Image 1 (cartoon, one colour):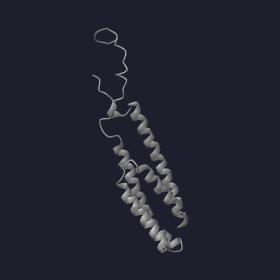
Image 2 (image 1 turned 90 degrees about the horizontal axis):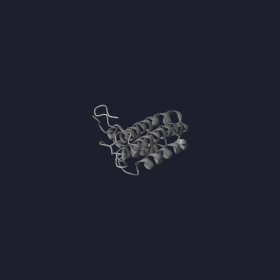
Image 3 (image 1 turned 45 degrees about the vertical axis):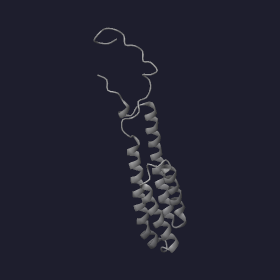
Image 4 (image 1 turned 90 degrees about the vertical axis):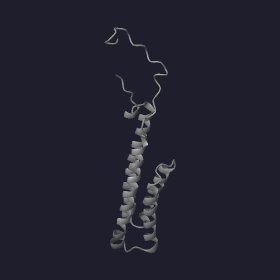
Length: 145
């Protein structure tokens, strides 16, 4: 019952139950997180070069090239987060980083740690998608007076 007129409010129809699209792009923030993670990951890979040189028996042409090219691809990949293939691309980079275990064990361990970070990002992505489908995002809520 409404407090103003004493009449019962009508039941919502199927048209009232549709989920409104978000007013703002909910993926924008997540794309920023993914791009920032790739940049931080590239910096970490480049900072691993002196470690491999000092502890790993030296940087060879192959190991140095592998790490530098991987870091450059990560930096370039940060700019492609709007593309539909961005998530598989990011996960492929994690596989390449884990394969860095053949350069040095520390590179492979770093790859596993970043794979865990990307796993958490995928959980966040799933949560945003679920909330958007249910109409629970703040930008999807209608203002009632």
